[in-house]
Amino acid sequence: MAAARAMVGVPFRLHGRSRESGVDCVGLVMLALEAAGQGRALCVAPARYSIRGGHVSLFHQGLTRAGLRPVECGRAGDVVLVRVGVGQFHLMIATSDELVPDGGHIHAHAGLGRVVEMPGESPWPVLERWRLNGSASRADRHPEDGEP
Picture 1: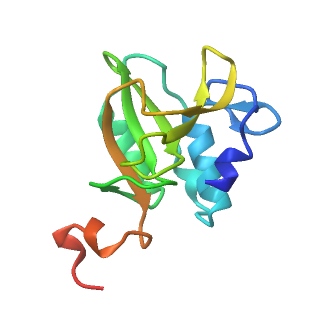
Picture 2: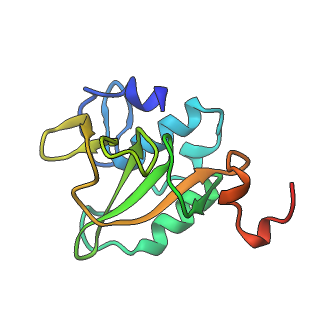
C-alpha cells in the first residue's frame, strides 16, 4: 500500500505504466505489485483495452496471472474491483480494512486526471477483492488452498 500511496498525484494516462508518463488503474496496481516484490506484474498486464465495453473476465485473468486471488473479507492493501458503469470496471487499492467506516481507496481518477486517495467507502459497487497469494490469513483461505 505504501507504493500506491507514493503514487498519489501521478498524472492519469490510459494504458500508462510509469510515474513519469502517468498511469491508469491497471498501471497503478501493477506498479504497486512490483514494488511489493511481484516482479512479473507488468509483464502480465494487458497492453490494450478500452475504458468502456470491457468484460470482468479480463480482470480475473490479469489479476490471477499477476499472483493475486479473490478473498471474501477485505483488508488494507487489497486490490478492489468495482463496476463504475455498464461494461466499465475499475481497480482501486484499499487503504483500510473492509469494516472500518472511514476506510478509503487509492486509485487513478480519470476525471481528476491523477492518482488520488479518497476517504470512505467506494462510491461504486464492489464486485471483488483480490490479495497477493501467500498473504491471506486462515479465515480468508478458500477450501482449494488446503491447510498451511
